[in-house]
Image (cartoon, rainbow, N blue to C red; front, side, top):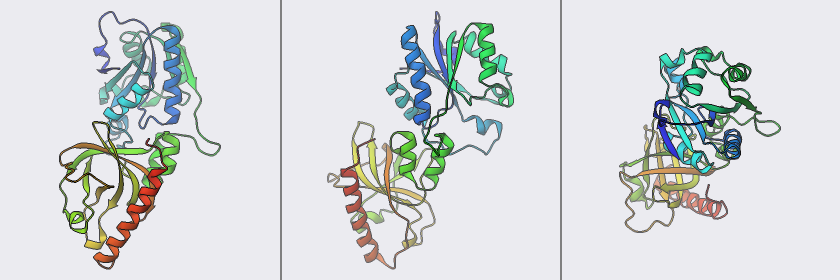
Length: 315
């Protein structure tokens, strides 16, 4: 899959293509339906499938300070899109100037002049242009004028839930990682760098990798989780993950720590970029009256995590 920064990166001689547009944070099952429809149509027409997305999140530009927690960084998003068969991921730098483009200006400057869209496929609730005044009907009207067709894909979900990035964020924020996984079609993950902590876990017999998450990461609610530590070389190591301030030791800084189950002796993760995926929530963060009950509970957490992960597919 090709990755472009801005539509100006389109190569000379670029022909027609099928385009889908959106932030696609999380690339959840609803997004997958839209992107899959674009890929399917592109294959039928013999043209590339292009995902047009944005960075930074439009909310932060239009309303500074409102940046939502992010379910996927650009790197993971690219991996997910490639797995869906996308040919080009084009990341548009979202600026205040760009946000002020009228719907017709956006269509002409991006979809017509640069991408030469033949078909545009979006969710039925898609909005675009200054103050989000453009909708699917307006896009279809522009398509008739400029020579491309438009399809609006119905929203996806269950009988009582519509899958959306907002819904997944609410699940993650509540610690409902199972609910998030149901909408994502895979376990929720966060990414970052392993940094040095207090090394207290080593003294207790449970050495942990302290993750410094990427900015704006959607970190689950405080608690203990069963999950996996994902290394860049493809390893997925089963882990018990703790999120919180470590109240037993009067901690104040919120931390994300992963104890790798049955780790090889000498495993050194410091400075490594890793991911943490969350399979199930084990319990709330608790304050213990001393080290002994804490260590006993940690032993139980590790055993429960091992049992859960043995029957939980990597995803």
